[in-house]
Length: 341
Image 1 (cartoon, one colour):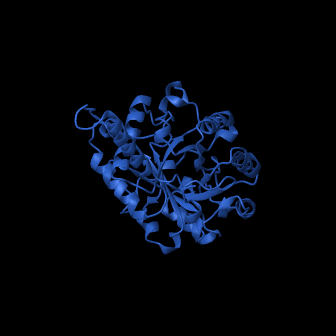
Image 2: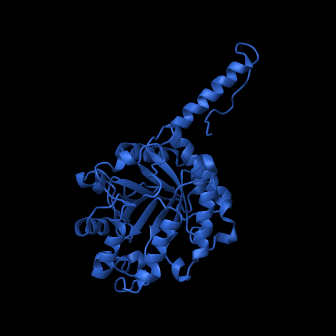
Image 3: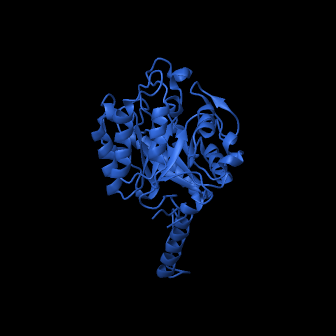
């Protein structure tokens, strides 16, 4: 149980020790009640989310029915860019307010990736404390579940997070948000599910059960075995099951869709992903429905164009799969379904 009571001094005069222990327990219980309900759907249900830039999301909402249960957003602690005002780093425009102020999105949840690369020591030293508070205020203001991926893809070699620095920064962020308190956030520990940075074991980055509401992963090239394998995914999912945490596919796209998704990719990528969802009862599936190859950040990196609506055959199969009873969309009662169990 998380408890913010630090430096408690037990005096034998004034209060009996037993009374002080009661007060300590009560304080810990109060702190625990400040944690969000983790926003987990009932067993056998999967929230469908799409991302990850304004143009791509708008196109999906306009062209694909029904609307997803939620949207993917991104920011960083240095600037909190892309929340209140538009921002574009070369991967499409990010602008959370575009959606929070859109009544059509009122019944959607948000999954927020928090970028921390090269900033961990600034976080643990306290230099980002005011930014953490501002981020917590923003999360509270949207009045719906926000699934916060703190330092997403922490194990990816491209992020070069040292495990001890990452753990301390993750816990520091959570501790500050709990003290505010931020009451509509679920903390997500999100793995890249690939061969890890400096070959550390996955649990080297684990901040502890009291700090993790969800365990997430990214699914890109593993079905093809070109960056990570399905074994990497299975190990991560089994770790999550051992921790009794809900699992979310927090980023995914069929990598290599040059010129658009090919029919063969349904069997090569989509089917293995849907099989994973069933096998591990994955509670959230976030799909990046974007024309990656048109965005400056991803030029000549082989991502391609993963927009479902670009291939009518793929879109038809997608809708047949994701309109099954397992998948949750933006309905009037969605947020009520995510209430604490």
